[in-house]
Length: 416
Image (cartoon, rainbow, N blue to C red):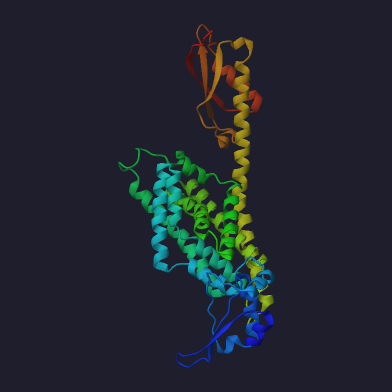
């Protein structure tokens, strides 16, 4: 073993073992963080696993010319395989702690949703412990550790199901109480609506969070802050799904639940791919089948991607719907403004609309009402059939067959 260290040019110190007598000596040597894995692999070839154990400790300062040379040789940025496993296990807390933090973060996030408070929701994410299970599952997959995989997957599924249940119970308890406005429609709350109309842009948060989580663990930097980003992608939509169940809005629960699942798969996908590309593999051991591990990784990647593609059909439909809705709504408003700008309508000004465009009613030819604000300057003449004229003009321009136009007049005074 000492010969192997000499060949690598590594300084070391040896003390005689004075414990129970199970070992002959204690060996200590400094090595750059990126050199831990290759040096341990070399020591394993000379039998370190057979009659010794290894402790990897962080070192504050080492003054050594030989260490400088080692730093140039081992100039990688990732930690060793053994340290990765240790950090992944540290990120996944005990079950009772995990449940307590998850319940508390969901309660705070649900309150933030009902108050339409982004600050409260972000504050709840600091408490959420969801980064650990996602990273643990990915680490276990690339290293062939089924124990880590099963624990990470189980914690994620159980945790998000619990978050939905907590959101539903809290919504049921608060609904119709003095703490909330009477007849509150949660679909009108912007923070809730944001999670019930998921588009492909939602994936960028999840994919970015998964990549950032993997990088932070590999390089031991900013894990706490990255955990907030991962939690933002999961806890608020899970709480929104719970509120949808509490209020009996199936569309809210389904849309938010879809967003949770897509984000969960995206986080696991990006973390798994990054760990694999970083070169993490199971320890070189006869008991491990490297080809089997590679097939396992590819099989899980395939399953995740298939799930994402299936759920992305919902995101795609919403994305296309949002795009078409914006286009038709803009066309209706532009056409109304163009008509009122014509000479025959002098003194009448288009001020906007007060109704939210309903694209579903528009494409299904159901009766759809559009309320238009029209400013009337002093002395202007208002045609008695202005609403019908606007109706005919907008219907002809956009093909809306069952459009009903309602006009709200605003008295205006214009200075010279």
